[in-house]
Length: 214
Ligand code: SF4
Ligand code: SF4
Image (cartoon, rainbow, N blue to C red; front, top):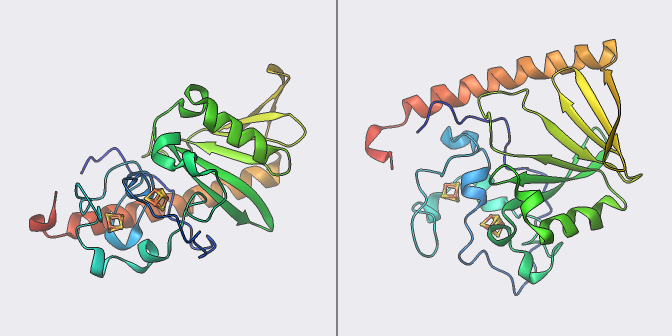
């Protein structure tokens, strides 16, 4: 397991449990790579060591963690068209609610997936009409302060890097501003928490028996 691939993105617990009856993950196992699973000490952005070729894809299917049993991405819940299965889109999508605000979370499997995939862009734009869309990827996964893109319903795009926000309107840089003092304090507290969580995941991963490594 690579030292440099930890990331503070976890399978969301609040994903609605409903599955469209005719849908099944099939050949897709993308969330088993893209998302974090703390119960296994699995960082985001690396394949789970229990991932296997062929159905059901999970080598510990009968005893997999509860978070894996409960997780349903947006496609599995019917929030995307049939052809937009995550492994085809190149991203895992979820509707998440944080601090009372719901957004579409797009976690790219590879940097630039949104730009490369017309389907993924179409999905993002469709949701953007009524919700913020938050885009992250699996680069710099040791960095809990990795850049984030926000596509907002009014057409604005924000790129948050560290304490700075670049605002784009109609594709052009319109403004660059520093976060307010309360926002900076909240961000620093969040970073401390994320770093603690990443360190805990690393400790757990190091304690896993060598025999269970892929
Ligand atoms: S990303 Fe969705 S469709 Fe793919 S394996 Fe995970 S839950 Fe199933
Ligand atoms: S334990 Fe199984 S379901 Fe959970 S992330 Fe690993 S391979 Fe996927």
